[in-house]
Length: 449
Image (spheres, rainbow, N blue to C red):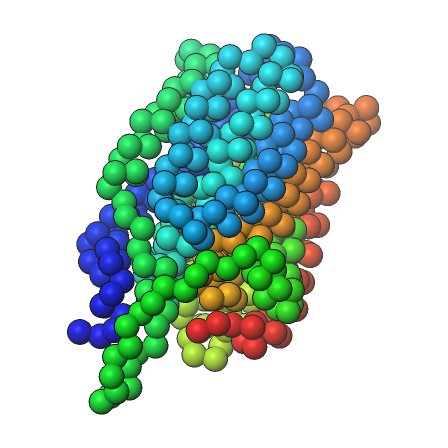
Protein backbone atom coordinates (compact mmCIF):
# COMPACT_ATOMS: atom_id res chain seq x y z
CA UNK A 1 0.00 0.00 0.00
CA UNK A 2 1.42 3.42 -0.91
CA UNK A 3 2.00 6.16 1.56
CA UNK A 4 -0.87 8.17 0.11
CA UNK A 5 -3.23 5.40 1.23
CA UNK A 6 -1.90 5.17 4.78
CA UNK A 7 -2.36 7.38 7.79
CA UNK A 8 -4.97 9.62 6.19
CA UNK A 9 -7.92 8.53 8.28
CA UNK A 10 -11.37 8.42 6.67
CA UNK A 11 -10.01 9.80 3.38
CA UNK A 12 -8.46 6.37 2.72
CA UNK A 13 -11.89 4.95 1.78
CA UNK A 14 -12.82 6.01 -1.79
CA UNK A 15 -16.53 5.29 -1.26
CA UNK A 16 -16.68 7.32 1.94
CA UNK A 17 -14.83 10.30 0.51
CA UNK A 18 -17.23 10.27 -2.46
CA UNK A 19 -20.10 10.42 0.05
CA UNK A 20 -18.46 13.31 1.88
CA UNK A 21 -17.89 15.21 -1.37
CA UNK A 22 -21.53 14.70 -2.39
CA UNK A 23 -22.81 15.88 1.00
CA UNK A 24 -20.54 18.94 1.02
CA UNK A 25 -21.83 19.76 -2.47
CA UNK A 26 -25.41 19.53 -1.18
CA UNK A 27 -24.52 21.90 1.67
CA UNK A 28 -22.94 24.30 -0.85
CA UNK A 29 -26.11 24.01 -2.92
CA UNK A 30 -28.14 25.28 0.04
CA UNK A 31 -25.53 28.01 0.50
CA UNK A 32 -26.39 29.31 -2.97
CA UNK A 33 -30.12 28.66 -2.73
CA UNK A 34 -30.25 30.88 0.35
CA UNK A 35 -27.89 33.41 -1.20
CA UNK A 36 -29.62 33.70 -4.59
CA UNK A 37 -33.30 33.22 -3.76
CA UNK A 38 -33.59 36.96 -3.18
CA UNK A 39 -32.91 37.56 -6.90
CA UNK A 40 -36.03 35.78 -8.15
CA UNK A 41 -38.15 37.33 -5.38
CA UNK A 42 -37.17 40.95 -6.20
CA UNK A 43 -40.31 41.83 -8.21
CA UNK A 44 -42.60 40.49 -5.46
CA UNK A 45 -40.69 42.28 -2.68
CA UNK A 46 -40.50 45.49 -4.71
CA UNK A 47 -44.23 45.42 -5.37
CA UNK A 48 -45.10 44.97 -1.69
CA UNK A 49 -42.41 47.03 0.06
CA UNK A 50 -41.73 49.60 -2.72
CA UNK A 51 -37.92 49.40 -2.69
CA UNK A 52 -35.75 51.10 -5.31
CA UNK A 53 -33.17 49.18 -7.36
CA UNK A 54 -30.44 50.76 -5.23
CA UNK A 55 -32.07 49.46 -2.05
CA UNK A 56 -32.49 46.01 -3.60
CA UNK A 57 -28.82 46.15 -4.62
CA UNK A 58 -27.85 46.93 -1.03
CA UNK A 59 -29.83 43.90 0.20
CA UNK A 60 -28.22 41.58 -2.33
CA UNK A 61 -24.72 43.07 -2.08
CA UNK A 62 -23.28 44.94 0.94
CA UNK A 63 -25.82 43.62 3.49
CA UNK A 64 -24.57 40.13 2.76
CA UNK A 65 -21.03 40.64 1.45
CA UNK A 66 -19.46 42.81 4.15
CA UNK A 67 -20.06 40.41 7.04
CA UNK A 68 -19.68 37.34 4.85
CA UNK A 69 -16.27 38.37 3.57
CA UNK A 70 -14.76 39.79 6.73
CA UNK A 71 -15.93 37.08 9.15
CA UNK A 72 -14.66 34.38 6.79
CA UNK A 73 -11.07 35.22 7.79
CA UNK A 74 -11.29 34.60 11.57
CA UNK A 75 -13.59 31.62 11.04
CA UNK A 76 -11.11 30.07 8.59
CA UNK A 77 -8.27 30.76 11.06
CA UNK A 78 -10.29 28.77 13.59
CA UNK A 79 -10.95 26.04 11.02
CA UNK A 80 -7.20 25.47 10.65
CA UNK A 81 -7.18 24.58 14.37
CA UNK A 82 -10.47 22.86 15.25
CA UNK A 83 -13.03 20.62 13.54
CA UNK A 84 -13.85 21.96 10.09
CA UNK A 85 -16.97 19.79 9.95
CA UNK A 86 -18.37 21.39 13.12
CA UNK A 87 -17.76 24.87 11.73
CA UNK A 88 -19.47 24.08 8.41
CA UNK A 89 -22.40 22.45 10.24
CA UNK A 90 -23.03 25.32 12.64
CA UNK A 91 -22.66 27.79 9.76
CA UNK A 92 -25.30 25.87 7.76
CA UNK A 93 -27.77 26.08 10.65
CA UNK A 94 -27.15 29.82 11.13
CA UNK A 95 -27.48 30.89 7.50
CA UNK A 96 -30.56 28.69 7.00
CA UNK A 97 -32.21 30.11 10.12
CA UNK A 98 -31.65 33.69 9.00
CA UNK A 99 -32.97 32.87 5.52
CA UNK A 100 -36.21 31.77 7.16
CA UNK A 101 -36.27 35.02 9.16
CA UNK A 102 -36.16 37.02 5.89
CA UNK A 103 -39.79 35.96 5.45
CA UNK A 104 -40.78 37.97 8.53
CA UNK A 105 -39.30 41.28 7.29
CA UNK A 106 -41.53 44.33 7.64
CA UNK A 107 -39.34 46.88 5.88
CA UNK A 108 -35.91 47.64 4.47
CA UNK A 109 -33.91 47.50 7.69
CA UNK A 110 -35.44 44.29 9.04
CA UNK A 111 -34.72 42.56 5.73
CA UNK A 112 -31.25 44.15 5.70
CA UNK A 113 -30.55 42.70 9.16
CA UNK A 114 -31.76 39.24 8.20
CA UNK A 115 -29.56 39.29 5.08
CA UNK A 116 -26.61 40.22 7.28
CA UNK A 117 -27.40 37.15 9.37
CA UNK A 118 -27.30 34.99 6.24
CA UNK A 119 -23.87 36.45 5.52
CA UNK A 120 -22.68 35.69 9.08
CA UNK A 121 -23.64 32.04 8.67
CA UNK A 122 -22.26 31.59 5.17
CA UNK A 123 -18.91 33.06 6.25
CA UNK A 124 -18.05 29.69 7.78
CA UNK A 125 -19.20 27.47 4.94
CA UNK A 126 -16.89 27.67 1.95
CA UNK A 127 -13.24 28.04 3.04
CA UNK A 128 -13.34 25.13 5.53
CA UNK A 129 -15.10 23.03 2.88
CA UNK A 130 -12.35 23.79 0.34
CA UNK A 131 -9.83 22.59 2.90
CA UNK A 132 -11.85 19.42 3.60
CA UNK A 133 -12.10 18.55 -0.09
CA UNK A 134 -8.36 19.15 -0.57
CA UNK A 135 -7.60 16.73 2.30
CA UNK A 136 -10.05 14.07 1.11
CA UNK A 137 -8.60 13.81 -2.42
CA UNK A 138 -5.09 13.34 -3.83
CA UNK A 139 -3.50 16.11 -5.85
CA UNK A 140 -4.24 14.45 -9.19
CA UNK A 141 -7.99 14.56 -8.47
CA UNK A 142 -8.36 17.87 -6.63
CA UNK A 143 -9.42 20.13 -9.48
CA UNK A 144 -12.19 17.73 -10.45
CA UNK A 145 -13.22 17.18 -6.82
CA UNK A 146 -13.36 20.92 -6.23
CA UNK A 147 -15.27 21.29 -9.49
CA UNK A 148 -17.83 18.73 -8.31
CA UNK A 149 -18.12 20.61 -5.02
CA UNK A 150 -18.54 23.84 -7.01
CA UNK A 151 -21.56 22.34 -8.78
CA UNK A 152 -23.34 23.71 -5.72
CA UNK A 153 -23.10 27.15 -7.36
CA UNK A 154 -25.19 26.47 -10.51
CA UNK A 155 -27.42 23.87 -8.85
CA UNK A 156 -28.11 26.11 -5.84
CA UNK A 157 -28.62 29.16 -8.03
CA UNK A 158 -31.02 27.24 -10.29
CA UNK A 159 -32.98 25.78 -7.38
CA UNK A 160 -33.12 29.18 -5.68
CA UNK A 161 -34.64 30.64 -8.83
CA UNK A 162 -36.96 27.67 -9.31
CA UNK A 163 -38.25 27.10 -5.78
CA UNK A 164 -38.34 30.80 -5.00
CA UNK A 165 -40.28 31.58 -8.15
CA UNK A 166 -42.75 28.72 -7.75
CA UNK A 167 -43.41 29.37 -4.07
CA UNK A 168 -43.74 33.13 -4.56
CA UNK A 169 -46.11 32.69 -7.49
CA UNK A 170 -48.37 30.07 -5.90
CA UNK A 171 -48.17 31.17 -2.23
CA UNK A 172 -46.06 34.29 -1.49
CA UNK A 173 -42.46 35.44 -1.24
CA UNK A 174 -42.38 35.23 2.55
CA UNK A 175 -43.24 31.54 2.57
CA UNK A 176 -40.47 30.96 0.00
CA UNK A 177 -37.85 32.25 2.46
CA UNK A 178 -39.32 30.26 5.35
CA UNK A 179 -39.50 26.91 3.57
CA UNK A 180 -36.06 27.09 1.95
CA UNK A 181 -34.42 28.18 5.20
CA UNK A 182 -36.20 25.51 7.23
CA UNK A 183 -35.07 22.68 4.96
CA UNK A 184 -31.45 23.82 5.32
CA UNK A 185 -31.65 23.63 9.11
CA UNK A 186 -32.77 19.98 8.85
CA UNK A 187 -29.57 19.13 6.94
CA UNK A 188 -27.33 20.13 9.88
CA UNK A 189 -27.41 16.84 11.89
CA UNK A 190 -26.66 14.71 8.79
CA UNK A 191 -23.47 16.68 8.17
CA UNK A 192 -22.46 16.92 11.82
CA UNK A 193 -22.81 13.23 12.68
CA UNK A 194 -21.76 11.45 9.47
CA UNK A 195 -18.72 13.43 8.24
CA UNK A 196 -15.29 13.16 9.87
CA UNK A 197 -12.35 15.54 9.64
CA UNK A 198 -9.52 13.94 7.61
CA UNK A 199 -5.83 14.29 8.47
CA UNK A 200 -4.62 17.68 7.29
CA UNK A 201 -2.24 17.30 4.37
CA UNK A 202 -2.53 13.51 4.39
CA UNK A 203 -2.41 13.30 0.59
CA UNK A 204 0.41 15.85 0.28
CA UNK A 205 3.24 13.66 1.51
CA UNK A 206 5.73 12.51 -1.11
CA UNK A 207 5.80 8.87 -2.15
CA UNK A 208 8.68 7.02 -0.46
CA UNK A 209 11.81 6.17 -2.42
CA UNK A 210 12.19 2.44 -3.06
CA UNK A 211 14.04 0.80 -0.18
CA UNK A 212 13.81 3.87 2.06
CA UNK A 213 12.17 3.76 5.45
CA UNK A 214 8.66 5.18 5.51
CA UNK A 215 8.37 8.30 7.64
CA UNK A 216 5.33 8.62 9.89
CA UNK A 217 3.19 11.61 9.05
CA UNK A 218 3.04 14.20 11.79
CA UNK A 219 0.38 16.90 11.28
CA UNK A 220 1.83 20.39 11.04
CA UNK A 221 0.77 22.94 13.62
CA UNK A 222 -1.79 25.43 12.25
CA UNK A 223 -0.27 28.65 10.98
CA UNK A 224 -1.11 32.07 12.35
CA UNK A 225 -2.89 34.65 10.21
CA UNK A 226 0.25 36.77 9.92
CA UNK A 227 2.28 33.76 8.86
CA UNK A 228 -0.20 32.91 6.10
CA UNK A 229 -0.23 36.46 4.80
CA UNK A 230 3.57 36.62 4.89
CA UNK A 231 3.52 33.66 2.50
CA UNK A 232 0.80 35.12 0.28
CA UNK A 233 2.43 38.56 0.05
CA UNK A 234 5.44 36.94 -1.60
CA UNK A 235 3.31 35.20 -4.22
CA UNK A 236 2.13 37.59 -6.95
CA UNK A 237 0.10 34.87 -8.64
CA UNK A 238 -2.26 34.78 -5.62
CA UNK A 239 -3.11 38.47 -5.95
CA UNK A 240 -3.63 38.40 -9.70
CA UNK A 241 -5.84 35.32 -9.35
CA UNK A 242 -7.81 36.82 -6.45
CA UNK A 243 -8.49 40.16 -8.10
CA UNK A 244 -9.13 38.52 -11.46
CA UNK A 245 -11.76 36.32 -9.84
CA UNK A 246 -13.15 39.37 -8.03
CA UNK A 247 -13.58 41.24 -11.32
CA UNK A 248 -15.39 38.26 -12.81
CA UNK A 249 -17.63 38.12 -9.74
CA UNK A 250 -18.60 41.79 -10.07
CA UNK A 251 -20.52 40.87 -13.19
CA UNK A 252 -21.09 37.20 -12.37
CA UNK A 253 -22.92 37.90 -9.11
CA UNK A 254 -24.42 41.09 -10.51
CA UNK A 255 -25.89 39.29 -13.52
CA UNK A 256 -27.12 36.36 -11.41
CA UNK A 257 -28.95 38.83 -9.18
CA UNK A 258 -30.38 41.14 -11.85
CA UNK A 259 -31.02 38.91 -14.89
CA UNK A 260 -34.36 37.64 -13.48
CA UNK A 261 -35.52 41.27 -13.30
CA UNK A 262 -34.14 41.91 -16.80
CA UNK A 263 -36.20 39.00 -18.13
CA UNK A 264 -39.29 40.53 -16.57
CA UNK A 265 -38.72 44.15 -17.59
CA UNK A 266 -37.15 43.77 -21.04
CA UNK A 267 -38.39 40.36 -22.22
CA UNK A 268 -41.85 40.38 -20.63
CA UNK A 269 -41.45 37.13 -18.66
CA UNK A 270 -43.50 36.63 -15.51
CA UNK A 271 -43.95 34.14 -12.70
CA UNK A 272 -43.28 30.46 -13.29
CA UNK A 273 -42.10 30.92 -16.90
CA UNK A 274 -39.40 33.34 -15.76
CA UNK A 275 -38.31 31.04 -12.90
CA UNK A 276 -38.00 28.01 -15.20
CA UNK A 277 -36.14 30.01 -17.87
CA UNK A 278 -33.46 31.45 -15.58
CA UNK A 279 -33.14 28.19 -13.61
CA UNK A 280 -32.45 26.29 -16.83
CA UNK A 281 -29.73 28.73 -17.86
CA UNK A 282 -28.08 28.62 -14.44
CA UNK A 283 -28.13 24.83 -14.13
CA UNK A 284 -27.25 23.71 -17.67
CA UNK A 285 -24.72 26.42 -18.45
CA UNK A 286 -23.18 26.47 -14.99
CA UNK A 287 -22.59 22.74 -14.57
CA UNK A 288 -21.13 22.39 -18.07
CA UNK A 289 -18.82 25.36 -17.53
CA UNK A 290 -17.50 24.32 -14.13
CA UNK A 291 -16.75 20.77 -15.21
CA UNK A 292 -15.28 21.75 -18.58
CA UNK A 293 -12.99 24.37 -17.04
CA UNK A 294 -11.66 21.96 -14.42
CA UNK A 295 -11.27 19.06 -16.87
CA UNK A 296 -9.30 21.23 -19.29
CA UNK A 297 -7.11 22.67 -16.52
CA UNK A 298 -6.34 19.21 -15.10
CA UNK A 299 -5.61 17.85 -18.58
CA UNK A 300 -3.48 20.77 -19.74
CA UNK A 301 -1.92 21.60 -16.37
CA UNK A 302 -0.09 18.32 -15.74
CA UNK A 303 3.56 18.50 -14.78
CA UNK A 304 5.13 21.90 -15.37
CA UNK A 305 2.25 23.40 -17.37
CA UNK A 306 0.67 25.18 -14.39
CA UNK A 307 -0.19 28.20 -16.54
CA UNK A 308 -3.18 26.27 -17.89
CA UNK A 309 -5.02 26.79 -14.60
CA UNK A 310 -5.43 30.58 -15.05
CA UNK A 311 -5.35 30.63 -18.86
CA UNK A 312 -8.38 28.36 -19.33
CA UNK A 313 -10.75 30.72 -17.44
CA UNK A 314 -9.14 33.81 -19.00
CA UNK A 315 -10.02 32.60 -22.49
CA UNK A 316 -13.52 31.85 -21.26
CA UNK A 317 -14.03 35.43 -20.05
CA UNK A 318 -12.87 36.85 -23.38
CA UNK A 319 -15.47 34.79 -25.27
CA UNK A 320 -18.23 35.40 -22.70
CA UNK A 321 -18.45 39.20 -23.21
CA UNK A 322 -19.76 39.26 -26.81
CA UNK A 323 -21.90 36.19 -26.17
CA UNK A 324 -23.71 37.89 -23.28
CA UNK A 325 -24.37 40.92 -25.49
CA UNK A 326 -25.73 38.74 -28.31
CA UNK A 327 -28.00 36.82 -25.96
CA UNK A 328 -29.47 40.00 -24.49
CA UNK A 329 -30.26 41.41 -27.95
CA UNK A 330 -32.08 38.58 -29.72
CA UNK A 331 -35.12 40.11 -31.49
CA UNK A 332 -38.57 39.23 -30.17
CA UNK A 333 -39.66 37.22 -33.21
CA UNK A 334 -39.57 33.67 -34.56
CA UNK A 335 -36.51 32.28 -36.35
CA UNK A 336 -36.57 29.64 -39.07
CA UNK A 337 -34.04 27.00 -37.91
CA UNK A 338 -33.84 23.80 -39.98
CA UNK A 339 -37.42 24.30 -41.09
CA UNK A 340 -38.76 24.87 -37.56
CA UNK A 341 -40.11 28.16 -36.23
CA UNK A 342 -38.20 28.89 -33.01
CA UNK A 343 -39.25 31.75 -30.73
CA UNK A 344 -36.64 34.42 -30.07
CA UNK A 345 -36.57 33.74 -26.33
CA UNK A 346 -35.41 30.15 -26.98
CA UNK A 347 -32.68 31.34 -29.33
CA UNK A 348 -31.63 33.68 -26.53
CA UNK A 349 -31.77 30.78 -24.05
CA UNK A 350 -29.24 28.77 -26.07
CA UNK A 351 -27.00 31.82 -26.46
CA UNK A 352 -27.16 32.54 -22.72
CA UNK A 353 -25.89 29.02 -21.98
CA UNK A 354 -22.50 29.79 -23.56
CA UNK A 355 -21.50 32.84 -21.47
CA UNK A 356 -23.07 31.27 -18.38
CA UNK A 357 -20.78 28.26 -18.82
CA UNK A 358 -17.69 30.30 -19.64
CA UNK A 359 -18.24 32.72 -16.75
CA UNK A 360 -18.06 29.85 -14.22
CA UNK A 361 -15.20 27.91 -15.82
CA UNK A 362 -12.75 29.63 -13.47
CA UNK A 363 -13.99 28.00 -10.25
CA UNK A 364 -12.20 24.63 -10.36
CA UNK A 365 -8.88 25.83 -11.85
CA UNK A 366 -8.50 28.98 -9.74
CA UNK A 367 -9.61 27.43 -6.44
CA UNK A 368 -7.24 24.50 -7.08
CA UNK A 369 -4.41 26.96 -7.73
CA UNK A 370 -5.09 28.77 -4.46
CA UNK A 371 -4.96 25.44 -2.57
CA UNK A 372 -1.50 24.84 -4.01
CA UNK A 373 -0.03 28.26 -3.22
CA UNK A 374 0.35 27.43 0.49
CA UNK A 375 1.18 24.35 2.57
CA UNK A 376 -1.72 22.16 3.73
CA UNK A 377 -1.94 23.64 7.24
CA UNK A 378 -2.61 27.11 5.77
CA UNK A 379 -5.33 26.19 3.29
CA UNK A 380 -8.44 27.33 5.17
CA UNK A 381 -6.97 30.75 5.96
CA UNK A 382 -5.55 31.17 2.44
CA UNK A 383 -8.92 30.20 0.93
CA UNK A 384 -10.70 32.70 3.19
CA UNK A 385 -8.23 35.41 2.16
CA UNK A 386 -9.02 34.65 -1.48
CA UNK A 387 -12.75 34.67 -0.76
CA UNK A 388 -12.45 37.95 1.17
CA UNK A 389 -11.16 39.69 -1.95
CA UNK A 390 -13.45 37.86 -4.36
CA UNK A 391 -16.66 38.33 -2.41
CA UNK A 392 -16.11 41.77 -0.92
CA UNK A 393 -15.43 43.17 -4.39
CA UNK A 394 -17.66 40.81 -6.37
CA UNK A 395 -20.81 40.59 -4.26
CA UNK A 396 -20.35 43.83 -2.35
CA UNK A 397 -19.72 45.98 -5.42
CA UNK A 398 -21.29 44.12 -8.33
CA UNK A 399 -24.88 43.71 -7.18
CA UNK A 400 -25.17 47.21 -5.73
CA UNK A 401 -23.34 48.82 -8.67
CA UNK A 402 -25.71 47.40 -11.27
CA UNK A 403 -28.73 48.45 -9.22
CA UNK A 404 -27.38 51.98 -8.69
CA UNK A 405 -26.54 52.39 -12.39
CA UNK A 406 -30.05 51.17 -13.26
CA UNK A 407 -31.58 53.82 -10.97
CA UNK A 408 -29.30 56.49 -12.47
CA UNK A 409 -30.31 55.58 -16.04
CA UNK A 410 -34.03 55.13 -15.34
CA UNK A 411 -35.00 58.78 -16.10
CA UNK A 412 -33.55 58.34 -19.59
CA UNK A 413 -34.28 54.69 -20.43
CA UNK A 414 -37.20 53.76 -18.18
CA UNK A 415 -37.72 49.98 -17.91
CA UNK A 416 -34.75 49.42 -20.25
CA UNK A 417 -32.31 51.04 -17.77
CA UNK A 418 -31.39 47.64 -16.33
CA UNK A 419 -30.32 46.45 -19.79
CA UNK A 420 -27.78 49.28 -20.07
CA UNK A 421 -26.62 48.70 -16.53
CA UNK A 422 -25.86 45.08 -17.44
CA UNK A 423 -23.89 46.30 -20.46
CA UNK A 424 -21.70 48.38 -18.13
CA UNK A 425 -21.02 45.39 -15.91
CA UNK A 426 -19.83 43.21 -18.79
CA UNK A 427 -16.60 45.19 -19.06
CA UNK A 428 -15.41 43.71 -15.78
CA UNK A 429 -14.92 40.43 -17.65
CA UNK A 430 -12.17 42.12 -19.68
CA UNK A 431 -10.23 42.76 -16.45
CA UNK A 432 -11.10 39.25 -15.30
CA UNK A 433 -9.29 37.93 -18.38
CA UNK A 434 -6.21 40.17 -18.16
CA UNK A 435 -5.29 39.50 -14.51
CA UNK A 436 -5.22 35.66 -14.70
CA UNK A 437 -3.08 35.91 -17.84
CA UNK A 438 -0.55 37.93 -15.83
CA UNK A 439 -0.71 35.41 -12.97
CA UNK A 440 0.31 32.62 -15.34
CA UNK A 441 3.82 34.06 -15.50
CA UNK A 442 4.56 33.41 -11.82
CA UNK A 443 2.24 30.51 -10.96
CA UNK A 444 4.76 27.74 -11.60
CA UNK A 445 7.30 29.40 -9.27
CA UNK A 446 4.69 30.00 -6.56
CA UNK A 447 3.17 26.49 -6.70
CA UNK A 448 3.56 24.23 -3.63
CA UNK A 449 3.56 20.52 -4.56
